[in-house]
Length: 282
Image 1 (cartoon, rainbow, N blue to C red):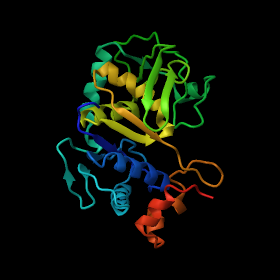
Image 2 (image 1 turned 180 degrees about the vertical axis):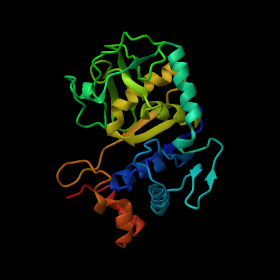
Image 3 (image 1 turned 30 degrees about the horizontal axis):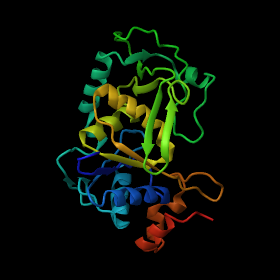
Image 4 (image 1 turned 135 degrees about the vertical axis):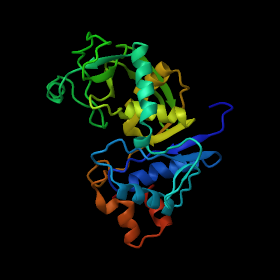
């Protein structure tokens, strides 16, 4: 980040209404970007769950919180900034180009394992992550030049340590093959994975610091590997502690009573919700 103007981003997915946990992360991101530029990106790759009404709701709710962004879609339907389009559903050519670069340079291999095969593998997802299981390596020796319909995985170097300093959580170390395995880059239906799309967009939009929830720490380790493989600079990272409900479970979009839209409609003022976002739920 040395010598570069600060560029941070908010990257919500329009698969439901934003909640207090999102508010906490976005407020921290906005504060860290106060002396630089804040970008809002619509991470709408999940075509089955993304909805236009959720896009509009997230734009309105973030603005209502008092967060102002310089680039990205605006609540009035316009888009500002010179790094657009700011919706991932409109950036497919960039992901395809990165995929072909990774394939051409030998980082990927095709995987024909079914979901059933993966669920039967001895490794399970980490409980704290919206994560994929550690892949057992079944298809590692498949021909990387194959044109078969397959999922494409990034081959990690087992035992490699990926280290980074998190601005909020301190030093982090993850071991490839232990904390995560060969991960999906492109699905068999041609849809890029979160890891690939996020890396391509953060690099293209010149993001200097990524602020997001701590549940994505392992994703950061994967994304550092992708950034290196693609030849992109690695941004700084700051992972925010998750907000949990009274049962100790992290908030989810299904917690409608704690959605920003519900809190708005119940008559709370933005400053009250901002305070709630930094208060533990009793």
